[in-house]
Length: 189
Image (cartoon, rainbow, N blue to C red; front, side):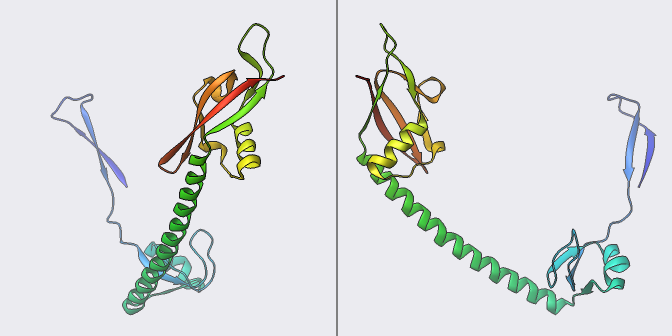
């Protein structure tokens, strides 16, 4: 690769224009690896490499062999079949996840209210201990048997915690749907 400096007829930022020249690059070729090659692939895998790498390193050492056109077509067919199988398995797994999400969302819709008792600061409605997402998860687990991830819980109060007495709203995001749970914080006796 070389660079040529030419004076420019247009005055943009500088009076010289840099033109980048490079030699013709050959297209990559597909080869079949006879053994594991670090940074290239595993044994019996069809990979795409530069022709110089194949000609100078892989072929002379016996680590790879050239593929004829018929073998390339067969490799493409087998890779397409593998991709189709993976896609079918992915769709089945996604359907199971969607079913679990709908089931969890249905159970969360049944949970209308959670109640917590906290110690109160004298002459105030602020609590000594806040209600956190972990508290909500443990309450849902022990009372309703629901497993909810912490990242799905959204508390609208500052800092993601409920720090005062009264009724508060908490949202649980399951996929595209949102379930709303009312949280009541009472003063501890």
